[in-house]
Image 1: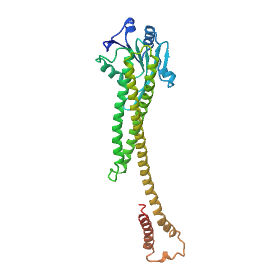
Image 2: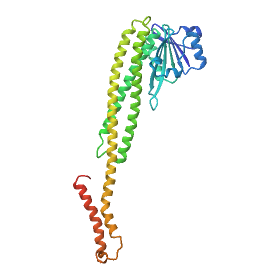
Image 3: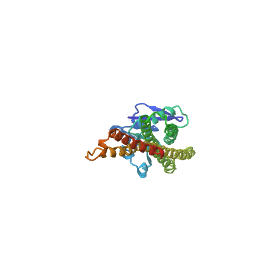
Image 4: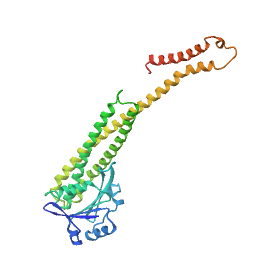
Length: 325
C-alpha cells in the first residue's frame, strides 16, 4: 500500500491517489507491504532504490546505515506491542534533501499515531528530514513509556514472588503462580531486548544523519538531534536497570522453584528412610525358619507389629529432633 504526504506550514497533509507529478513533489512516501507495481512506480518517479525486506533486515552496520547516490539509507528494528506477544519488525528509511521514503512489511500502530498526531502539528514536519527526526523522537518517547509500564509490571511480579508464605494457598496454587511468573518474565525480557536493539540503532542513526546530511540538514534539527541522543542515553540506562531487575526476579523465581522441588525430595527421602527399619523387621520375621522362637509366642504377632511401628516412629522422632522435618 502506498500513501503520500505533503507538507504545508509544517503540517502533514495526506494526498489521496497521487499522480506521478504529485508523487514527485510530496515530502513523505510511506510504503506498507508494497507490491512490485508500487515499488517500480516509486523508483521511477523518485529515482530512489526501494529496499527489500531482506535488505532492511540485515544487521550489519554497513547495511543499516549507508549513503548511495546522495540518499541516506537507514533501517531500524521496532517492536509491535499491540499483539498478545511482542513482535519485532524492521522499518526502512530513505532520506534525501527533497523527501523521506519509509518502507515497512508489517503493521505499526506507531506510524498511525504519528500521522494522527502530527497532522495538526504546525512546526514538526516542514521537510523530510524533520519528519525523520520527529519519527525517531516519537519512537524513543513511546519506548520510554513502554519501559515505564515494564517497571510497573516488574514491581507487581516482585511483590507476588516475595510475598509467598505459608498461607500462599497451597502447593498447587504456588506452582501455578511461579509458572505464570516465569512466562511473564520471559515476555518482559523479549520487550526489553527489542527496545534495547532499537535504542542502539537509533543512537547510531542520529550522528550518522548529522554527518551524512551536513550540507543540507536544516539547522534547527541539530539541537533536536543532540536532545535525542541524550534521551537515548537516559532510556538505555533505565533499560539496563530494568534488565538487571528482571534477571534478579528470574533468579529469585527459579530459586523458589528449586526450594519447592527440594521440599518434595525431602518428603520422599524422609518417607523412604522411615520405611527402612519396618521393612527390615518385616523381612526378618517373614523368612519362616523352623527355629524362630517368636513364632511360638502367644504375643508374637503383636510384638512384631509393635516393633515395626516403633522403629518407624523412632526414626521420625530422630528427624524431628535434628530439625530435618
